[in-house]
Image 1 (cartoon, rainbow, N blue to C red):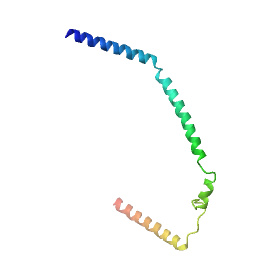
Image 2: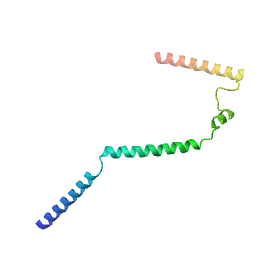
Image 3: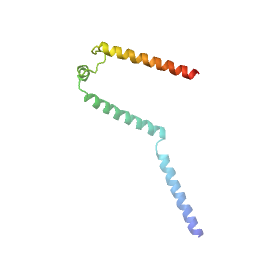
Image 4: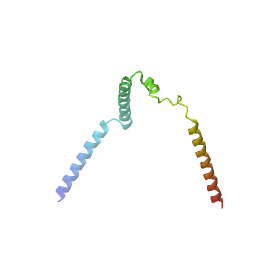
Length: 104
C-alpha cells in the first residue's frame, strides 16, 4: 500500500514538473492576446475590403428611384388632413376626460 502511495506521489510530482515547464515555455497571456487581436484585425480588414468590393457603385441611386427617399412625397388630399385633424381632436378630448377622472 505504501509503495502504491509513493508511486502515485512520484507520478504527480512528475506531471507537476511537466506542467510547470510547459507553462514557463508559453508566452505571457498579454502577448498572446496582442497577437490574437492583430490577427483578428487583419482578418477584419480583409473581410471589410471584400464587402466593399461587392457593393455596386450605383446603389445609392437605386434608393431614390424606388421612392424610398422620404423627402419627396406626393401631397395628401384635404380629406386626409380633415380626418387627421378630427382624430387628433378626439385624442385630446379623450385625454382630457381621462385626466378629469384621475383627478377625482
